[in-house]
Image (cartoon, rainbow, N blue to C red; front, side, top):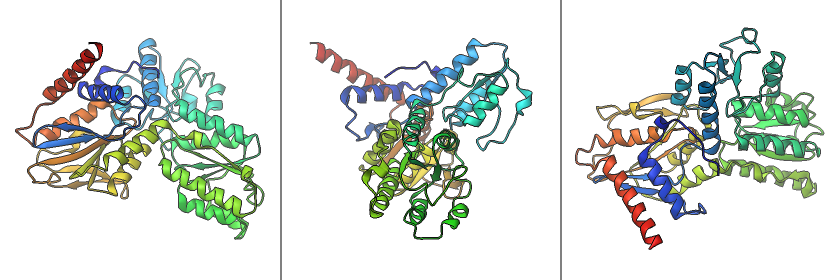
Length: 415
């Protein structure tokens, strides 16, 4: 897989050594057990896969390269490039401006842009309508395009099955930038509808099976279906694709549920398109790694990432099913008095928990991060937690131990 040039301040010697070691030991990525880091009275269990994915590294490389190669030019991002506050703030500090927020509300009106300006498309992609708006301004929307290749894969698959007469069911959060972009692309080729969870899929099933008055569909799914959608005929054959950051298991559950409804209706299996190939590898790996990590008995879990990050929030959901879980943006949320400010997904806000670390002699913490979180942020969280354990080994000592083990392994392999 291609390697990318990303700024050094996003990297961590400790995390790099761990990932290099795990990659060498498990080239086929079949081992989802966590990495155990022993610091004395504190132990961390790091998920097998976490942090920057292919799409995020690609976006970061393009964005910072664009800045360095175009001094003096005005550079804009459509909105947040990825859902990580540090990366977005770093781009703002470099002079990049956001045209709109993640909900589509403008900071910069279209009329303030000119054909001499650079506009970077974020990793989530954008709608066909926005692409046309940029073209009308004389700006090439594909010149500085950081859209994740796996998002584009979903668009391409939607186009393929849409042209064969299938209606596209998108499993995603209706307001999320990626979902809006996927919906725009899919509805260009076929009738499309967004369902955010299994509950909404169950509502849709009633219309698919013609068990309820079709007129109710347009109120129940208001704002989530394409123009000229005809509920009486557009659910005859369907395919399910996903917003790449959703829970893969839930996307599959929705797909299986709707496929069963199709067959119950007496339709042939061909009425349901197989779209399992649209699931993002990084989302799958990170979620599988969390499930593997949760097999380890621990006192608590910490998940690091932006609070508006969809893929990170789903890692939190998985952890919360098993043990106390704290969702934080960075190490600054861990206070010197032993309290922690963490985000509650259900409340959509931060809360403070005092004395979150157990007073036991040996503390075990599960740790992971979202696909848009720099490894350096994860290392800083480890570093901050070690402050509460005065006798703990240093990060440098543990890093050197891992690197020495790697050197010894390489030496034995060549002898």
